[in-house]
Length: 100
Image (cartoon, rainbow, N blue to C red; front, side, top):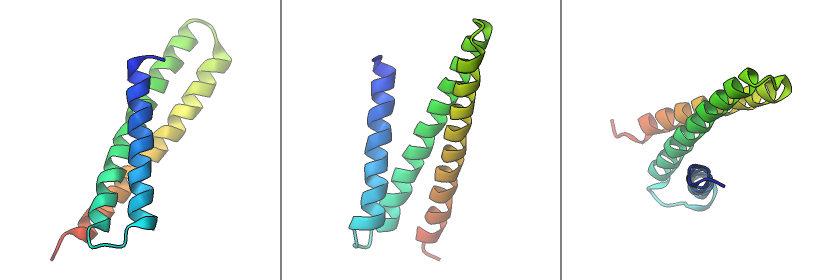
């Protein structure tokens, strides 16, 4: 496993743990801020994974492996959707956390 993959796995698991902790466990006043930070990091990590899968899809297509290219493109699209959902949720919760 390359260092980049290890870094992405740690960021993915860590930020998912922070989001789960912020949503379901913590009941203090800083819950929304903790969840916003976790969702933002999770969205950025999902976006990086989606870009890496897009590059892998292009490489597989150039090498003539069509099934792998389609599979990685589909998985990359799912990660891109998850990134947009996470970042959108972080923006909405961030606006809710800001005092008026």
